[in-house]
Length: 331
Image (cartoon, rainbow, N blue to C red; front, side, top):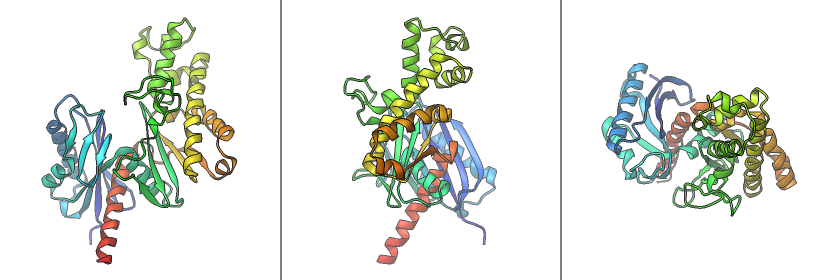
């Protein structure tokens, strides 16, 4: 009998990534397309359809072999009703019934969840293979997102909005955040925070090779450029990343004290800076968090890399099917 498969979709503000995978997380075929973010939701959904169809075609898979489709989307997600309630990365998306649209198009059970929550689930299922019971996944990129595995279960809160750790307040007098608050963690420890501080210091006349790397156009400064300058020995760049690591560590210390996890995994584009970022962060955790919790936690880079989203969506299907099966048995 042919092996059953799951299709994962990672919907972001810049790309739509898909993966056809086994129940063990082995990816058999992939799809990719840019997100037509300036278009209305129907155009984005059409792009999702096309990307899914291409992936199924590449895998030469009959739809009857697909157990389910999982969708990881950024924003506030109403998983119970299958709607994207709001997404800052997808302008105009308010209560969009994405699950039903995909389910009706392909005739396959579809499950929708928040991208960071699902990435945590993916790391737990396929990264650490359920070897820990309490895990926090943090994505550090343009902003900061997170997902929580507590006692072997994905924790999403009473309305599915848990895990918005990027918006805990670190500095009440800090920078204004896109969420409307001030001093959120992501205003101090994200890619945007890194870029903003670099531009501020350059404007004050700090000497740096960053300017040469962007050809004198400071609008081209981003985390990748700053990381490259740091690798070349630029003092400003190294200082900026160390500062970012400090604020990352302050937030991590809070998480360690609140959740007492066994493992914290750091993913996202900014996290690719590795030890240059993580070592200052871990130092702050050791200095600020309770010693008992520090002794029991490991903080390291995420294991699935850029596949955390699509494999998280795959894991979400497995998770939901298991819950449905358990519910039927109880009945």
